[in-house]
Image 1 (cartoon, one colour):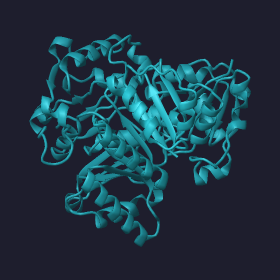
Image 2 (tube, helix red, strand yellow; image 1 turned 45 degrees about the vertical axis):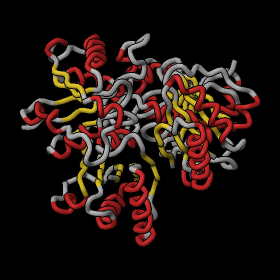
Image 3 (spheres, helix red, strand yellow; image 1 turned 30 degrees about the horizontal axis):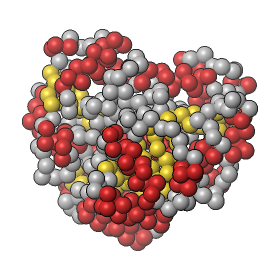
Length: 251
Length: 251
């Protein structure tokens, strides 16, 4: 009997000023996570921190030092691991072939969404393992719901180019698509470049395009601002942009 | 002092064979929902059913019969309510202007994502209300994470055309985009047409395209199948397609 692959979401707080986990995750997610003893992760240290927090609300099936935690290789963090011909994660799932359930986690939020992990899920399907996604926060969707933009047609486009000219071109291209089709465009940035991206969006987008930003995606200090670009310029909000943020625009 | 708009997610079980809510939603979501007494919803009856379940794990701020529940107009259910020039939801938010926090809910999952509600969020921003998204299940993201498809670049395109020829054309168009850019394409269908859509995807997509389906999005009976189209044809899985499902494809 093969084990299953559980996709275990983590809170968005990155362990900074953390609330008890049972405030951030449904009990079912915590119960399932506490039963696992084998993990695949971006970072073993933060996964141990997460498991310590899980253990505060649910007894762990194995003590922290007995948990088997393997890290995805560095190349996957940088280049992503989606698509064929990339990283082969099947060897990481060996414990599942001998009956152990395995958990996949990322640094924050849902694994394999705006984060590595897809290679592990693909490998699980190829090995015939059951794949079980558990409920938890997805910052992109919290931002989309709170933006007031079209949630019936949207795209997540990841990071925009860092080069200023290439970024402007990309912004205009995405805006044209959004205005023509109604598809909301969602992007993210490395926190220390959030301010630069926000300025570029305000400069590059049409005054009548709606721009929304969710700052401090880590609950409960979340702040969402959504307005036409012309209004952003007239009365700039005071948003805390040093933490992960989500940027969205459309008509 | 104005009230805030809380975006309150509901479980994916549509009240059928329901697990206790504190298994499906984080405690923070339940605590916040229990404090609200004013609601905007697609369907008042199912919202009362939801509040009854909330009340089983958290004391409600007002008894069920004293809760103020207003429904979005029928036109919004059918045509959606995103984009400018559509439904003006500001009058529905009148209680917030006199200091009441207001909750927005949909039938299942996160309001305003693959469901109406965007008009209410936009109106809240226009009225200067704080908008607070709460954590809960988003079936599209559970499906995406569990698909093994690219979660760093994806689009939700809603429903495909019902006409067979128009649907084929749209499938080929979306596949071309997915293969060219790596963008995973996500769509949904009315449950009684799930079988038809699955067949159309298997016929219309290239044998080497990856196709994934999450059936029975309502936990815990969720079933996810992800394989190349050629493999779907060779060994067809037995998926329960009478409940809401999510369809995904890409490279």
